[in-house]
Length: 378
Image (cartoon, rainbow, N blue to C red; front, top):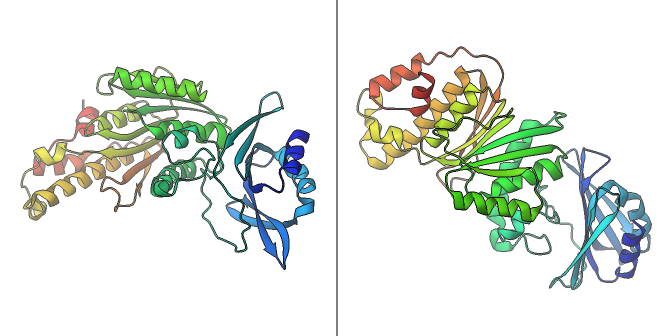
């Protein structure tokens, strides 16, 4: 730590921002960010610490900065020093020593005189998240690229929905199966969230049909040092779940009935948590026919397609409920960005009644198919 403090003292006239993240000693305490402000004509450092989802502020005089940081730094795994021309990052290793990285930047010194209110994102600026850098969402200084801010918000929205499931739990390990993972940046970000942000020992297995995609993803995981993130060539329509206890099944944009096979496997294995973002629900749209009060919605192709997609997901939610899951259907992405914006989030609660009579009556009346129902009816 003394080396960090010495570097801060020697670069204090160049410092623009300090970001401390990944708190070790207090799980309720998030990142702390410091930037310069002018108060009554004097230079101060204003700190913003997130604790229990609330922002707490303090103003530290410039000459007291190093002493103040000497108390705070030992509580954090990652320290980012953003200076005029250089960015310096310290990572706390398992040995208890800090690893130092340095890169150049184009930042210029500017003292802020206003107090800007910003949203507290779980994946915060200043965090070293390799997938966000490779995506171009973060620049090399771990700051959001302006043109990618919508994507940054969407990714945080996903992590917020994941985070909400595990609030109040003291889980130390988790094994996740990601069906139809593709070259999904969200899989890598989810691994970062559990292992770095939550401090949970996570194992994630990604299933995908394409061997070249699987090979590329395994290379990326190796590059990031994500030892317990593995990708496997597998067909969700034919394979069962990975041969070990699975705590959560994730399907992100698994196309058409691939989502149903993933949900089916999760249900029969009684997986505790399910997160599913369905995509391209063609099955009902291609088989449904007139049969009752909803005929008016099948007059126009666009309306029929959207109704069929909503009906597909509504039946999935109903089936999960009947098999003992509590189910939320949530907006994953703002509708202005994508009409495929529903997440089905489910948590196993009980054995359920397994009564699909209402769903089957609807299927019979309108003569449509639904793969999840058919799989469970075998």
